[in-house]
Length: 208
Length: 111
Ligand SMILES: [Zn+2]
Image (cartoon, rainbow over all chains, first blue to last red; front, top):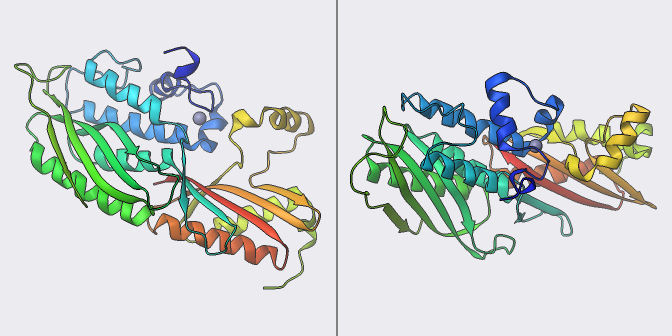
């Protein structure tokens, strides 16, 4: 990825946000009050830091560049998704008015639903399909990392129900499927995925 | 609602400031973000540094008698976001009275 590719459309980067959380320093502090994407990034990094409390030796807050594979993957997805993205239409009352939601605002909403479950951090949060055409079927794909010891299947089911309810309330998208995959199981006390043979991914899909 | 525009509403900056208050008053609206992302607004930022004028919080453009309004808002999850977007558009139209208008509302944050 090129240097410019690491920056959001506003010109700032996840690394700058991570440094800001650690040190309180940011080149343009006023920007943080007026940039929804940087605000979403800070919220996601704070939730990751909170997950770090469960992972004793993983210094997540300091890992702006990500030292572990799972953390790297979460940060890579954040870099991709912290941008306005596509416009999702909302039906106007007055014909001719143009009401939209940014794809970034909705993926951030999904991410926060996943992160709010105990011991869970969202990786990929994607809307697959033509979100800019009303009624077009959309598949939501969410990858999560879950701290070992939390019930995986219950976690995936609860998350799928939560996302379905959130999207029904806050969007007019036609959600065809919500696919939640437990991509990593994290061992407390170790900075990486649980040791031993690779665990099969927990994947499930259903109509909401 | 056919009310005449307030005196401050006859300039884009005056109308933008008035509309910002109108939008913030709508239930469910948490924030009004500057109408354009900063990276699109470097010329405007440079100009405002010289003149000391803040960047418009709501984009307002006059085209003869018609007016074009664009706002970027953050909403809370307390109310359904699409309904809040429609309420914002209605509040803008009510403020503009009988003026011909194009209204664009972009939700950029839901939380
Ligand atoms: Zn930003």
